[in-house]
Length: 368
Image (cartoon, rainbow, N blue to C red; front, side, top):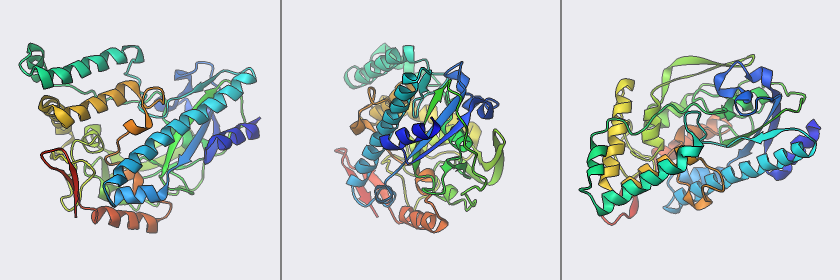
């Protein structure tokens, strides 16, 4: 049945597929499959590769359409991952087994989906109030709040850890999954089942050579270039760059600032916020930025709403249409091709890409 499962995944669009057991993952909180399925015995991990040319156009800001193409590619890939998972789930259930198609991203333990729609409705009403009734007392209440965002984003299941256990790849210095075939240019999915399947061995050699190019393209300074930390997935022990406050990543990859650490180039965000070096200050800056963006209304407020919707509702194809995805950064992942030569080429694309600015009418311009 193992070969049949892998073929079904490939036929549905997976480029890499592997299998692991619950025992290999159960010691890690982020990867314990019994959180999703108490009767879990095995996990099927799979990866879908990203189009390298679309990625390169995005990194180099080839033109205004490059961000639209990258955003659409992300949406199409996440929807494909959901379809692959559904195909595997359907097959396993036809054989009499239980199976769970795990959400591909934005599925956090602290978020209660049953309350999510109510939360988003409140956010939408707030944005409308700011536009149409700026003196409403409820807006004054928002101004007095110190915390608008909880950066505890512990996933229900780490697809990266599953992929390590399945032999698909290893964790790189950035913490992203690195595969021998595609580097970090993959998105991941997982299906949990109570079927007992023969596991694949983890990769012995890590494709990441710790070139640390990922740290040179991160405006948010999320990953340390010198200090490291250890992550253990089953018998596999990974050495990755020390992670700083996640708020730094939210500010950069969330599209709230296009520049901070590096001034010669930027992400695809037209806005500017200085991200503090000190971790203790990052949460404060993030929450202050969210408040300011909300109260500013317009496109800034819409960006806060988008972040809230993604965090609360996820990326499911019944929730988020392909055209609603928006990629601003992810440079630490997208720079990482399958060889150091490609990574260096991608870094030069970023360094020469210029910055994104917005005029008074809301029109986006690329300046090099």
